[in-house]
Length: 404
Length: 98
Image (cartoon, rainbow over all chains, first blue to last red):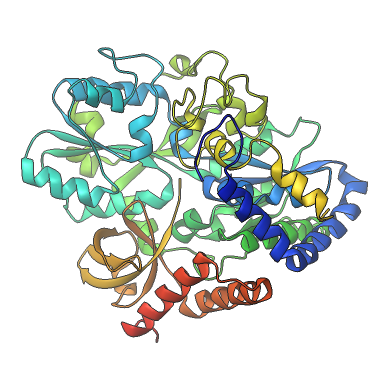
């Protein structure tokens, strides 16, 4: 399914897409009819507008299952900055590369392993290249694996902690419960999602087609609760729906957002009741509050955002990689031009542009040889479009079946 | 990057849990939520080696039923449904249903 052939989609995926539309045409028609009905009423007031999904997994569902092709003309589904790997400035990766060459063992998730840095360090432009050149870079699926491994070898090590609130509670647990061995430090690059959501939608407000509804991240909300989105909905005066990751979840969320917009309700609703509550997990929130301090952080494509990042609190600073290795925080002025020439990740991350409008997309920048960060992670918008949606097949099937 | 996978809690060891994604392999992960909320057999979502949520068995069953309806209409048995049903069965077998 991930076969890369210049933007063409593999036969297996064609089968999957056709199966979804053809076999479930009745269900699809029902939901699409519902969405279309509300959109027709809303377009009189708003004209064309956008619904923004924040989470990379939602973008995966929308693109993989061709949900865009089921939307009425004028209602656009756009992806927001929901991929932490895509919004992490290159500066931090470059520091990890430097430490790797100085003999520090670097633990990383698989997608960060491939993330290209803007400036090379000792001839390496990614952790993968650094490993090939002799640095000790180890891929893990979670911090528990790094703890077990670092304990066994006892060498100086760091764990590159990139992620959203979903990983923060796990990291907090390791700090508070003293699970990290003395030789393993955490480089917390955790980012907080609600400030980025607010800023992104505000940045798009001047666009011809504004964002009028938000599909909020389901798994982030299991930790922070649906309540975390209340201020976003009220400030932007648009509905927010917290939803799950099956295609049916996403379609229901779109329908719910349109219904609430029509009723003039700028509120937060939960479709993902099997996992999300209004309050979230209070213990997790308490742990995060204790182990971390909230900082102003830089998001690639968005810039400096107040209260949008987590660094280790003073109390647990013994485990802070920034302190241990004396790594200064990035200065905002050094975050300009943080992307390769021609790369449109900055616009794509905030939903201002599409991957297919990038001159590098599927030409110089492909999943097997990513140039920009959005092509690296499984949940980067470009990587998802490259694998599942580059050539408009879903549109053609939807039109053939008269689904919109 | 918040890809979450459903799993069953097989053992709890303080701040760690051993979980099964339905493939019979036990994996050690960090508990990122209140430990007292967890017990053997619970359905959870695991993200990047961290338990981030306990799923409601009843609501997960409703989702499985919805998927089953779609599958019956379509005359097929999608892999996703099989995964859901395997996980729900495991949870029942390990006493996760209250």
